[in-house]
Length: 233
Image (cartoon, rainbow, N blue to C red; front, side, top):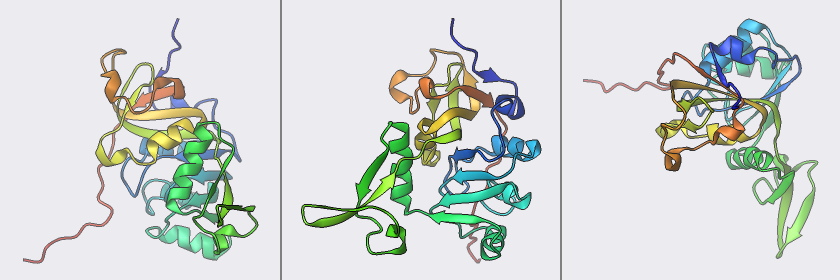
């Protein structure tokens, strides 16, 4: 008998999974493909001292930004944090830990963790503060640094469609960090715009196989524009 993976709402999907001090890999890029329902449920649960692996931290009132407002995030491991004033305030005041990763390095760390690869060597960051304290090794006359794969306690992702066994399809730009995060969680929970019956998705179009997803929930999603630019008439 196949395991039941579909949950009524985000809070139910997170029940029994959340714990203070845990690490969370969260999909999304800018405001695209953010698991907003799951983030709101984490906020309501009050789980604190969280470490987030995420490309960015959303904005002040959306995405991971809502957890910064409630001081539930202890540390961010990110590539870009430039759209969040509260993030800046907490970091500069010493309230929030920050580990910057080059964007490609963060993506590969998540992919490696999901593939069971504990570490890899890269040239990116050699000779900069990124390389401080990391193992250096020479290959073919070039210096590389060792980066560790990421395996988070929990991964939360947002997809377009998912079936009852957790097979996921992402739509356009939302196929960003979501597939990488989905494989990098010890437990992975997906929120989708639509849940369809098992077997109705074309296998050739599935981006994340259901074997990586333990729980799935259908949510309501807000389509935001991060930087709205209007033409002056």
